[in-house]
Image 1: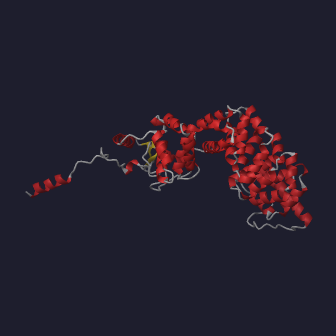
Image 2 (image 1 turned 90 degrees about the vertical axis):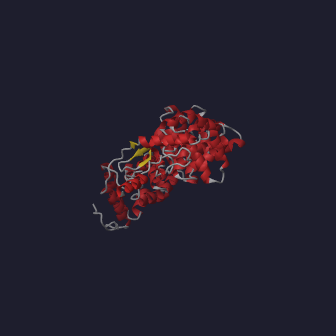
Image 3 (image 1 turned 60 degrees about the horizontal axis):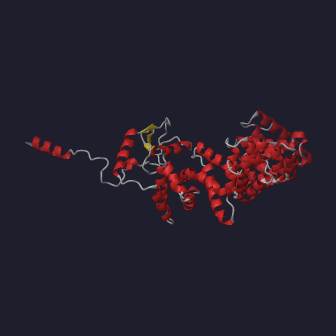
Length: 452
């Protein structure tokens, strides 16, 4: 009897499994959400640790150099992503039980009505981004909806693209802007004071799309083709007038394979190009202005170097070397190397010897390997090549710890040519110091470096 009662109690405790998705439930199971974005996964994939993420979110995590599982913090033996087909099927079944999603037009109206409510606006942006996923086949409808009301939709999206939300919302906003970016190109050829706001809006959107790493190269090439197909002279003037954002677009044009050589040469030969770029670099400390100058020099070579020097770029580049972030400082050092290769550039560097030498020597050890090689090349071209410039030799010899820094470069992981140039500079500096009585012996505080 006791055994029978126990069996009945056991049968009562054993219940049939509840369905994972209740037909009438509007809630989404936590297992369907990506641990990174907290959004319902579109393409769930699993890591070797067993944790599952949305493909886009975990790919961004891996692309930034992480080699651990975000959820477990365990090191990854492999970065292979395995599609979780069962979970994807369950998510699709769950989506079928939910009310139909609103149309892009309705979501845009929700975005416009969410002014002052960041959470509601972010939800609308992510809803639009979900509709342009390739597997949804709704990219054209989103593009058409946004294009139908560019003047209100684009500013709302730009508020996210410029950093007004978290990283995922910024990515989504730029992805939506990319679908309508070609529609904004005609704004750049408009005239009249009343259109200046639209021009500024269009340039900001184009810059956001062309500078985003998560926008495909084919999308960018379509946009650049739309730009160069119009009056290129007018487009360039409009971009330069727009400041730093316009320069970002211009840099993308100059470095793209889409425009032919004649189109790029026409841009690089524009008489006001370098004066305008130097002005923007001084006013806005724009890294894009430095990259755009470098692209123009790459296109035209010696004529562009001379134009850059005549525009007064040397003091602005020296300031960027001294104060800008590392990547920008390295680009500025590369442009100083280009300037030092021409007679006008070497003379201009000599005229600002104190500022240039202080900037280059002060930053020489605080940049990457490429930046150090640029720094040595600038100093060698201006101090040693062709007899060099006496003003630069004096300025370099007067720089704090000049000998020690050159020795660090020589004994570091540099190319043989850079090591030889550093050796030439070291001898020139020591001779200049001895001539002026600045140092009678090895005077560097970098005592761990063995002198040559």
